[in-house]
Amino acid sequence: MPNHANIEDADQVRRVADFRLALQRFERTSDRVVRQSGLTPRQYLLLLALDGRHGGSASIGALTRELVLAQSTVTELVDRAQTEGLVERVVARDDARVVLVGTTREGSRRLARALAALERERDRLGVAIDELNAALSRARATRRVTVSPPATGPRRRA
Image 1: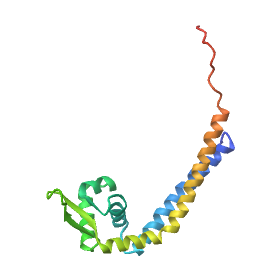
Image 2 (image 1 turned 30 degrees about the vertical axis):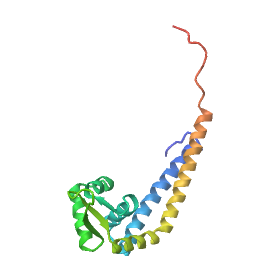
Image 3 (image 1 turned 180 degrees about the vertical axis):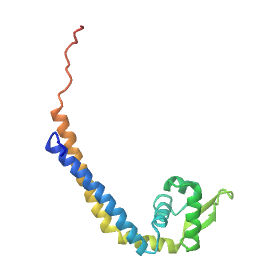
Image 4 (image 1 turned 90 degrees about the horizontal axis):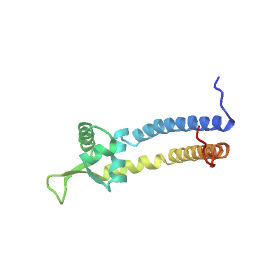
């Protein structure tokens, strides 16, 4: 059985474990709710990146960096989303060599439905984040109080 130095350490470990569990539950629930909204989890992340971080359109390269996926994977994801009418490809106004991926009305509609259905789950995750932050703050404050400050007097040479 682990031996914790003090109760604050045990509380911190418990809060971190609780937070990790909350993250796992959030991801599982999100995947289920997203599928019920007519999207795959990756399509949801694609639409979230487009609408939430790129103003509705972005290049494949920007999406590759945002989604942390290989370019070929993002291209395939966009192809499938385009087939389902969730996104469209548009030539950039300022550079005809650049093709942007943009969210369609249908894509925005499904994203909005998923976001609304996930509101309660986001609130639960927010509570878990707040509890973890509070535990970590208490642990930092305890360490500051219990750790002795360094000696400030002159050093003696040996």
